[in-house]
Amino acid sequence: MELSVIIPHIEALIFASDKPLAINDLFELLNNAMGFIEDRATPEQIEAAVNAIKEKYDSEFYAFGLLESGGGWQFLTKQEYHKTIAQLNGDKFLKKLSAASIETLSIIAYKQPVTKSEIELIRGVNCDYAVQKLLEKELIVISGRKEDAVGKPLVYATSKNFMDYFGINSAEDLPKIKEILKQEITEATKIEREENIENKEEVVVKEISSVTDESNGIKEDDSTEISQ
Image (cartoon, rainbow, N blue to C red):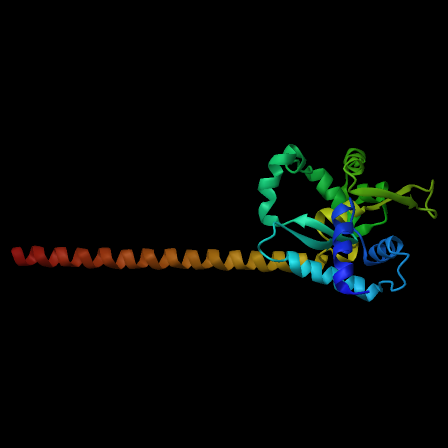
């Protein structure tokens, strides 16, 4: 099947879908729709069509683009238009997670699958409310039970909505803790160096001012002696 035939169908599927579509999803949907055609599309052709569509919408002339996030492909408005479209959705885009929810979500993201007691052990406080809010926002899901633990407690993991929200395809795409710590250390060192430079500059300025004052004093004395 020619790419020129495949591309419009792939574009229509992704546009009409309310969730990200993976290559396998597109492969099945397209071939089911065109089941009467002997020349069926291959996964390689589907992937080539997706890349062609992505390249098309990467142009600055479009306010949205084709992005891979949440485990599949979807059309999303570009970042620079966030404030504009936020006016249509009001508080939906403006509501922020509380500090407790962010901490809880971070633990789940990096420790998943994890039980509530394990989260509380790390945070040191009860996390019932934070977990409930994250479930309501569909950022986490109950992924099962910890069979080898007493009482077989529920275990939590991040959802597809979480991946979609943060623009990643799996938990493996999250920034590594070591990278974050390294960046923080680098930034802290940079700030410290800048402060040291500023302090040195202040000292130099004071020394120059002191020398200047002394020079002015000498000139005044000299002029006094001459006048006498």
